[in-house]
Length: 333
Image 1: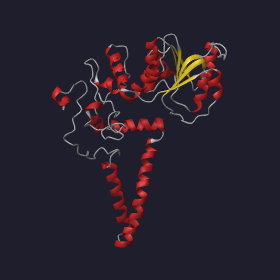
Image 2: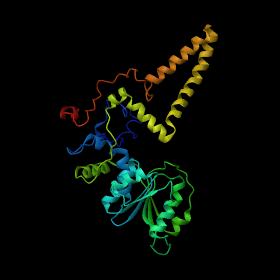
Image 3: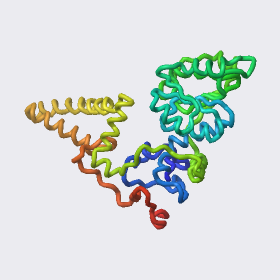
Image 4: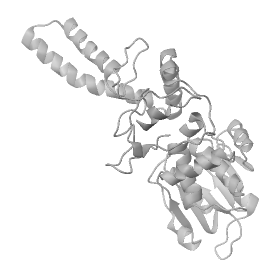
């Protein structure tokens, strides 16, 4: 398994400062490699860096969630969230999850959630008050022990209100807004603890591998696709389309990049036409050809089905197919 964080060199992530995150071939420094136990599949290991590593560090290493505690998890249906649900249940906590549909809540309860709140229909703070009572600033009555909130935005202050005295709010991100309205009165009056968690460490990944090997943790995988095969069959384009439907930004961002590239190219084409006497049709053809080249060859751009793949350096090691392992000689190299 590859730990994508460079903890020895200049820092950064593989796929961010070092190319290869979406490549069929990838070469990495040896210090980024983590040995997999024989009982852990490549598919399960792929879930650990980023999503599951972040969840374990937040819930266990820093948050220290304990048996008997009431844990409220916002954004529970995502990658980090589903791991938080399993880790809280493994700790023996009472797990309360928030999601936007009854279908998601049903799947989360299959993972071990004790209670589910459809936040599109119900205020989770009111639910907590009804179930456990309103927190009291002089006593430890009411509310929940832990709130897991990596969404931020409008959910931040309500999360504070759901905690009882000396409760803990765990956060590792801000998908709905990093600059929310704050209400410091709840923090000092109820002696709340705000605990941040940033990514994961190598030992967190080792802990996760042990949990999977023992059968205590099972990464949630929708489906496994061959990178090259899925590209040829159009599954990559479908995945991008599904992500665009969720975030509403991928296609707009790609269009914006094309427009940003087209503006200077059109200016250059007009100047070229004035100097050479080329016709408007010829200039449009030149610009279109350049944009098409950028779309099919430039790193990071989605290529059409018929486009040719960029050459891959021979020194890069092929990623083995699902369910197989590289020979020890290749691993040592």
